[in-house]
Amino acid sequence: MDASYRRAGAGGGGGSAPRTVEDIYKDYRGRRSAILRALTNDVEEFYGQCDPDKENLCLYGYANEAWEVALPAEEVPTELPEPALGINFARDGMKRSDWLALVAVHSDSWLVSVAFYYAARLTRSDRKRLFGMMNDLATVYEVISEMRQSKERDRSVGIDNSGRHKLPAKHAREAPPPPRVENNAREADEGYDEDDGDHSETLCRTCGGIYSAEEFWIGCDVCERWYHGKCVKITPAKADSIKQYKCPSCSSKRPRQQ
Image 1 (cartoon, rainbow, N blue to C red):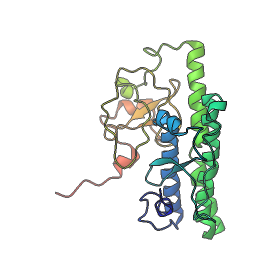
Image 2: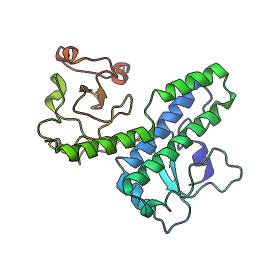
Image 3: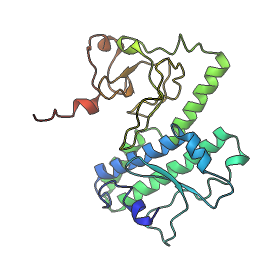
């Protein structure tokens, strides 16, 4: 993929660099979502593309939530900070979970470096505000590690998926689907089986946290995304009185004019 595509963030912002705190944060969230999708939903495809016999490969995440495994940019110096080089070489020399965690750490470093490359011209107070917004999200490493720990806990205690993995209150009518970090072209839900009891990889769309049976979750009846109740300020008692729940994103959308 050519350098201009990478500079434009794969279509994020029409090719112009983000300059405000809000635009840089939006760029950061898009790239972060792309990396998360590569390491969760698309992990088999990502793993297969990281062939150790190939040349130095990098994992790129773009502002439109698309990801790519590719060779590094040829230009020197590069237009933007580059991801970790040669992630494919360590793939077969480590446990798979350890390798994914290592890629996650390097990806977090790259995401921050890109954001602060754009933020270099901001004021000190704006940079502080930007970092605060970014820091409110879980890092890629935190998400991957929590998924790993959740799986290990489930295996060690032999959790009965048909019993404990149910959501409380009104929105327990169905368990949350597997995580979907979507790109602009949403994938069809054809492959999702509502009876599937393994929900340990479901992500809260606000904080990026992993589903846990110990916490209250609520699903949006419009976009079908899932959230910690605490992240959207909904308690189990409040959920009982809601006939149709709309998440903050769907609530802010204006109806189309007829």
